[in-house]
Length: 590
Image 1: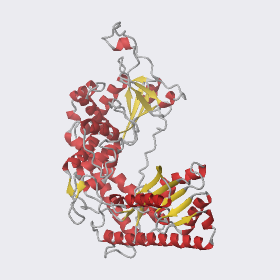
Image 2 (image 1 turned 120 degrees about the vertical axis):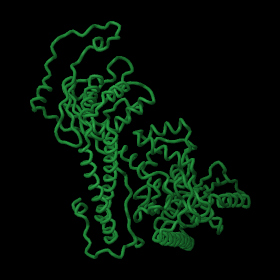
Image 3 (image 1 turned 180 degrees about the vertical axis):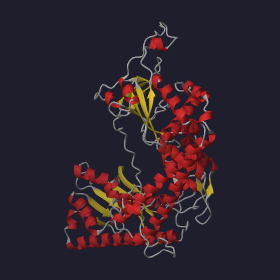
Image 4 (image 1 turned 180 degrees about the horizontal axis):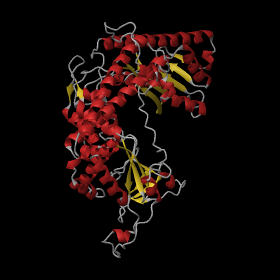
């Protein structure tokens, strides 16, 4: 007896709540009973919520698995495949649809369509009448899907143009509404999870660290689908931190198969719409979090306890490679600072104990930037400057995106509107940044520098506690906002370059001492012998202005993976747009 298997498919998730799957399965079982066959219930193929119009079911769905088994011989020739209709298998355009059907028939599989009781196999497909009938059936299925797709696209375009919320039922997970016409309401428990994410990010916590805290404290997951069974994965906080829906903004996206093939989120259609949703955090908190993220963008890894307050700042003075910190739980070094090229066996650059570097650098930096680190007004200015710089970076990235849209030949008039608005926003932010920097330079805080600040910081640099960790994270953020690069010549000299200047500041470093001499509490401690300081050639060169550091090999910033922009006829155009409006010079020169 021939083996009988079944294939069930429907296109949308909404149909999962209906009887489509049950109807198709019951119809397959009834056909087998009427015709004396036994349905193989252990080998059933289901594409639930998978499109046949785009070919997704044949590309990566259950149908693709069936085809692989058919071609490998795991499904033997002569097997009967029951489907409700041919359009359950494919609704693609005729060339692809006919190719797929012929491929199945020539492989020895016999298709039974329950809608008309016909059998499609190698023999029937060789018959002109049957072949033409299959062509007409497949063409009709494709035309029906194409018509529905076109109608939906026009409907959504109309609603986008009117800024209507009626046609768009989904929203961030912390929002809900009773009907499509009722206003959005905030689920406060879920919104509080999002606020905690932003508050921790503003303090310097990374995405994985926030996820660990969220899982440890059992925060509810604020996503719409909640496919992680209540668990926070390491990327979830990062995704929330990039979502401007927390400010109430919404960007309409084209989510067709073609759009998703260009970007996994779909293609943006038009500008962000403000006040589309209820805002759950302030603009100030959002900018603080983004500024903290921007400050840490260079350093790709952070130790769990944030012992490395110099993350992304230290570079080897001999070769320019980044310096890594190897934490030590024993001894008095506080950790070893090692050139990454030495770790790779490429150089023989010297290693240095953290304790011999940390105190010297911190004291020098605090004295130089006391007005920005110890005075409340200065600290607020540093944070404000970092926030503006983060906003500028986002606007410039958007401008680059616009330039790509121009290059691709997208509708110029709509692009002009967007480019003009961007140019205005960038100019305002640049003026604000210059004003804040000028204000910071006028803050006089050198006289209020307090040694207690240094004592508190140094006493917590190597302590394993939550309080000490938070202090180090706050310190790392401050340092990354005022320091550009630090070149280290082990046990000789460090060269600090600040973000507000081009000159290097020379910081002498203490000479290397044996651990027993450095730690009075060591079992066999030997008192320090008074002997002349060893000659330090690099320090001598630096003091004479002859030490030129190599180029710092800073890692490239991670790509923003931004979505592409598209502009269609639904883009609103202001009445006062000048016909001769020119694109901003910055965009034309990109």
